[in-house]
Structures are given as C-alpha cells and as structure tokens.
Length: 375
Ligand SMILES: [Fe+2]
Ligand SMILES: [Zn+2]
Image (cartoon, rainbow, N blue to C red; front, top):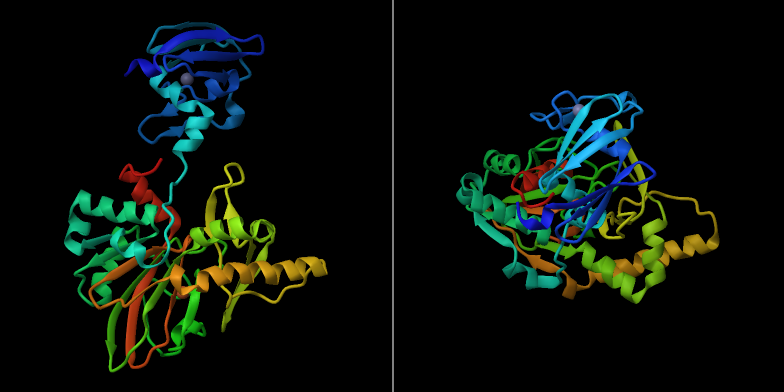
C-alpha cells in the first residue's frame, strides 16, 4: 500500500461519523450506520460470495464506543460489544467523486469511416483463446461501440461460439441465434430487401439488447446490402451543441415505441437520449423512426418539439459523412453496442443470408468487468 491511502488522522464527529484523513490529503466522512453495515467480519459479510450476511433491518441501532487506528486500519468497538476492523485500502475507495468517476464509461466518439482503422479487427482464434485478443475486442466495444472478429466459419454454429464469448446469446421474440433472409418469418422491416435507415434495435423492449452480433453468411447474385453504422453518442453531442433545446427535449420526453406481430405486442416509453441523472453523461440512445408508436401530446408545443427535435437528430444520423458504410463479408462477425451505435443497411438484390444474435448489456459488461476493463 502506498502512502497515498494510509490513514493519517481519525476524528469522531459530534453527530456520530468518523472523519478519516488519508495520506493523499483527502478526507472522507463515514456515517456510523454505514460503518456498521460495512463491517467485514465473518459474521457480517461472506468474503467468498461478496454478499452481506444481514438484512438491512437487522443492523442494530448502535453507537461507536471507542476506536483505534494506525496507518493501515481502524478498529471500532460498538455499543453492543461487536468489533469491526476496516483496512485503509478498503475505506479509501469511498471518496464520492473518485468512486463515481471510476464507474464512468469513457466512450471515444467517432464520425464516419475514420472508425475503420481504430476498432479491433481480431482473428477468431485470438479472440476465443487469448486474453489479449478478448481484451482487445471488449476494449473496442467500450471505446467505439464496434468490434470485428475475422476468420469465422460462415455458419450459424461458428457464429454462436463468438456470441457466447461476447457474453452469451440473449433470447427474445426473434429467437436466440437468428438467421435472416428475405423470407418473412417476422413482420419486421429488417426481413425485406429494402434499405433500412440507421436505428437502434428493440426500442420497444423494457431493456433493449446490449450488443447486436451480425454475420453475413452469404450474398449471391446480387449487389448492395452494405452495412451503415453511426455513433449515436456523437450525434447526441452535436445536437446538444447546435440545438440545445432539442437535446433537452429528447432527454426528457418519453417516446413510446411498439412492436406488434401475431401473438406479440411490446411497448416501452422512455427518452430517446438517456442521460445518467447525476453525471449527465450519455447512457443510451433509443432512436428508431420505424418503431415509434402513435401518441397523444399534452400540448401543440410538445407535439411540434417532438417532430423538430427528432428530425434534427435524424439529419445528423442520416448524413453520409457521419456514417461508416462497408460491406460485411462471410467470415467477419460484427459486434456493436446497441445502446450507442445505430445500424442500417443499403438496399440489396440477390440472395443474402445473415445470422446473429443479441447479447444483453448486463452480460457483455460482466465480461468487460471480469477482464478488469471497467469497475
Ligand atoms: Fe436493426
Ligand atoms: Zn461484524
């Protein structure tokens, strides 16, 4: 432990908190209820499962009777005779600003085809079998919201192996691993050969898929069908700069989206641009012009703001200069962050077969966290 996190002084305040000054000059205040709840002794905390052993209602109403400290730890004796020890290393993590900052994702915003040379393009064996390869792919997803995995056999089974390593196949009404072609097994526009404007998937789910995985298995006797990607976060940031009132509207207005097919009816209402309520950082883009539900508005102003702000955001996303357009070929699996990156495709002819799946956000972030890439 460096001197930075060593304990310098500890003071008990008149209102029952310990104020701990650390070597780095920071001083952190710990309420007595917090301290008792965070007791790390074996009867209060299971060190093997990282779970608390007591219900919150079981925290006794006690006070600090006495305490002792040295550079490395604080020992507390409670009014019910329970004893707790807290290491300096443990306590020093709870400076609110540092703690909050350590939990922020730090996306690197991008525009247009410039992204191509920056994202991870990793051979499948490296991704599946080496820590460096796996780390590279997840870092690219965190930074840019896109990663490519190459040399994958052009089958649904080989693609599934990649999906599993990205966090696991998420089951939805579209299945687990899906294959799509122009066959109409679902009513969705994706199952046609028409151009698809850039969008996020599942805006009508209470939680949209985290990653979308796409693999073009075959495209014969035809042209077109190029993939379009655009950074949804960059678009939101540009909207904030150029039309702050539209940005504001889209972060507050609950837009209802829906999906209806035989036996299914999903709807979900939420802002198009979701911000962290505390830090105001961008959390999710829910942009899909096709899946907007028919809505009633409380005022003419709200209705007109809806059209104006969505169109201004759409102009950014539809601008060719902001999009990366490329042809996905058999062998290359694309993974993209559906909370951030919008995808679309150009019109096509011929016989085109795509397969892929979704991965839930919780599951892919779990992988990234296990690799030590995020907190
Ligand atoms: Fe889509
Ligand atoms: Zn305890």
